[in-house]
Image (cartoon, rainbow, N blue to C red):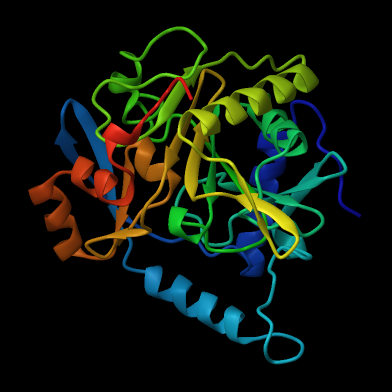
Length: 309
């Protein structure tokens, strides 16, 4: 039986589950080499992930499998027991990322199937706020394949802060510090791509209020960048792909135009200042062209921004 999250116990529960999953061979960390590339006062973290080939091979095998030989396997329905940490209310489960690069990397998975391109709900933010109340963390969401999502089953993600021990909470913190202090949608000076940013304050004590407030702010940021809903096969889906990032202190939405730039795949963590490359050739491309060229290449032109919605 999956246990409910007990207040103050998430960190220990994640660590216990990770230790057991490693012993069982269910948790398969991706080993990386970490380098720093500086641009415009931001010290981007660039990790080279040579073992991505292993993850991609596993994805291909999963996609090719299925009970009837044609349907892809859903790894979240149900998730592997060894990777399941706890229940987050009646709607979500906290599950270890099977192929983790960062320690304590959690996936917040809906118990019933919801599509990754459906808009987030108050229940999604309730599960996310439960985790953010436990320890300082970065929550993020890859809205669709173009935004870096690898599975169609809705899942948010959480990683502890700071992303780099001893550093800023995220590498782009110096630029975020220059953004407006008010809680309405605005722009981050120095971001050369379309986005909407706002301050917030999540109260670990009042989870319900925090969930409603963050859900409302999320919808305001979506409107600010022109993202709405569209019908697909009788269901409501997002009108275009995007990434969402939030901490206890701020929220950022970034519309996406492409998954790759020069062969480099980018998910939400890229907009926090953390990039992943396959090999030294891609690392050299990032160094030569600059990390903001990567982010601009997968984002939308800044001129299209209308933060007033």
